[in-house]
Length: 318
Image 1 (cartoon, rainbow, N blue to C red):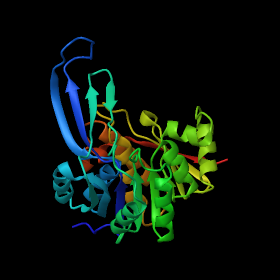
Image 2: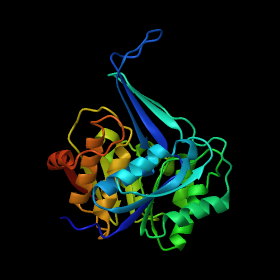
Image 3: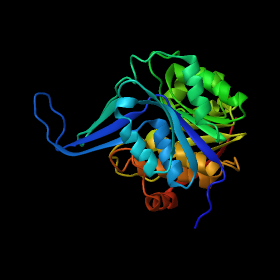
Image 4: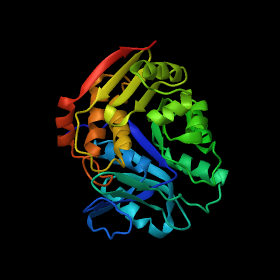
């Protein structure tokens, strides 16, 4: 029997969703009726997806944030089945349902707003965070936030967690990311487009990626820049590792970045060393995630196969 992971994790999701994926028999065409050949529906949201990976790898993990009380039961069942501690605060109404339509040629993502009428209450959000992280050492903040919340909400949470002595990982976008970065979380994971918005220039060459990593590492312990099928960059200190998994058949990209981040955190802590093994497995997990519909965690055996075919290269930062 394997030993339990020595680090306790918590994930925070303020905008969870039920991820619904519909696969069509033929490409979308205006004015036509389209037959759905397969449909899946899973409780998700970026932090929840990260928690799925951590739990499947034997980690102690709590998941918290906001859940609509009207349809919370589907999340409760999933969290219980995976032995993830439920630390969500219930709020009035339903948790949103997001849609992914796959027609054989393209993916069409339809994301609804999360809790559009929910008013922001500082004490409520702070209470939810404190309840979530009671026994956790590493806290992973993922996804977006309700539109009615202040843009600096995640930054406030990062500062609170850092003051409590927690290690903080952030994976968000837009102004939430820009504000969060100013609060100096330990690890950030923008994708290529999000990173370009942060640094103010296009990442068109490996040299540009290395430049961005070097700039961002001035305020963070680790920087991860995901780049779809081109792989991902992982940087720490004066070193960057680029990991590329083998080409796979893409079915659904919904949770690929979340699965990559969950696998990375499992391997990176507690030693906190960036190694080819850690980043190669993270990239392989992200690749395995796109091979299946919905946000289910890929089987470890498939990740093992892809790791053996992954390529990791080492680069010195400027």
